[in-house]
Every structure is written in C-alpha cells, then in structure tokens.
Length: 293
Image (cartoon, rainbow, N blue to C red):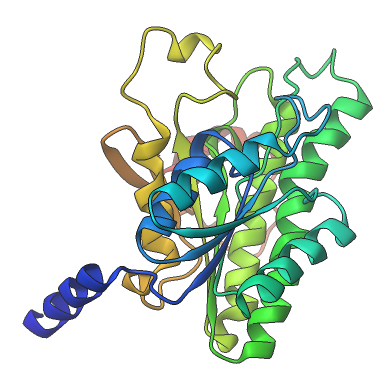
C-alpha cells in the first residue's frame, strides 16, 4: 500500500496527465469547460470541442471553444479548438483526427456534449426526441467508436469517460428524450467496457448533478450555488487517469461534495416450486418477495 501511495504522489507531482492527449466534447462551457481546464492543468494537451449552439442545439459558433482554449493557454497549458458536431460520423472522425494531427495521438476521450429539449411525453415531437438522442447517445457512440479505433491502432490502451445522468438512471419528469439517451449511454458504457477491456481501454461514466447553462433555470437549482461544474471535473479526471487503474464499466456520480456510484441491482427473486409457469395472479401475490433486494 505504501508503494501505491508513493506512486500516486509521484504522479500528482508530475501532473496526472503529462504527455497525454485528451478530447473533451461539449467543452465550451459548464462541466466540459471545467473538465478541459482541469485536464490541462494536469499536463494534458486538450482538444476543446464545442459546436457552439444554444442549449437546445440550435445554431453554431466557434466563440465558446476558442474562449476555453484561450483560458488554458493563459494558464500555461496547451489546447486546440474543435467545432465539429459529435452527432455525425464525419464530425466524430474529424474530432479524433484533429487530436492526432495536432498532438500525434489520443489517450483519453471525455464524451460530454449535450443539449436539452424538455417536454412531457405526450407533448414531445419526434424532432425533439431525435435531436436529443442524436447528440447524447449517437454522439457518444460515434465519438467512442472513432476514439477506440485510434487507441487500438496505437496499441497502448486508453480511457473513455462518458456522461450519463440521474435522469437516465432514475427518470425525471419532462425529460423522456434526455432520460432515454442517458440510460442508453449507461448501457453503451457497460457494453463498451466489456468489448474494449482486452485492448486495455477502460470505459466508465460520470453521472453529474451541477448548475450549468443547461440546468440553471430548473426549479431544483434555484438559490443553490454549491453544485458547481468544478465539483464534477475531478471525477472525470480520476476516470481518465492512471489512478483509475483497470476499473471499467462503472458510473461515478457527483452532487456537490457527495460522491457515490450507481449500480443496477438484481433482486433475490423467488422460485416457484416445480417447473410450472407463473400466473399473473401469483406474481401479484408474491410481488414483495420477487422484488426484495
């Protein structure tokens, strides 16, 4: 244990990510910005990706990504700006290619890009559904796929950090599209962790609760200043660094100073004697025993 602690202290003195190349999507503000700044402060060369659209995904601008790059450079770090969309194969490929062209490799991908188009399920349009799922779930898939191929070609392993949500894990009123996408990211994280483990690529996720441009007008965040993006960034740093070791397939949740984990739990269940099929009535009668954890 003493040797392990000493190794951690040595890494911390050097910078946890010295020599590493990191892509952070949706890094123009909020959680992504905090992650990009922290990763850069730990020695990483960072691709700051942000399409620069509004909260609902409409429009684009290079201002947000450039602003974060300027912050990193002003602090002595190294970064380049990327303005591609994560929601198309071409955009995802260009994001990874830019990391390779600028810095020669890719070691860590942080999938953070997202938009919101909240509406109750009976009022939600197909376009609202598709746009949110495209950015969150499809974007995470496309960027992870492109990054994994690059990491596999390098042959030195790598780390992918996804962003799920309490909405995806537990559900939330008015967010059917967002919750479905975030739940999908959980499933994608678990499956990618299994598939990429043999290539020494870890795949984990952060489930953040933070007050950002995306969430600042939600009732739960009114009058609260303790749930900041800066609380979330260290969790992503841990999962993106060697401190994470070979841990993979986990969801690390952060809400202010509270850090915890989400896990899917299987109940003990109940066996029916013999091989007979359960009836619906019997399920009702034994519901508590069936669902008890």
